Image (cartoon, rainbow, N blue to C red; front, side, top):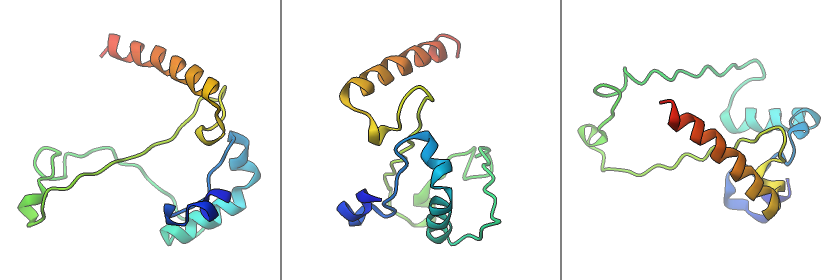
Length: 112
């Protein structure tokens, strides 16, 4: 919650620092997410990774909609159970996390 006070322009301002925080502070996180997304407590998010219906062959050319080109950044923060969430990691733990991820990436790229 502290980050929301320190960075009022961050948009949301609450982050879990350890995986257990999601359970311990679930009522708070649920309330914040429901308000932010204007969703009810019974809302269910369904992820649909099929982009074939978007644009042509899954590629959306926004210029055809009369919009200028745009740039987008998607930030995804995840963790391995062995590590703290990024906000609570120190430099040494970040380095160990990166080493663990490099091993995973090597496996992914070796078997495309």
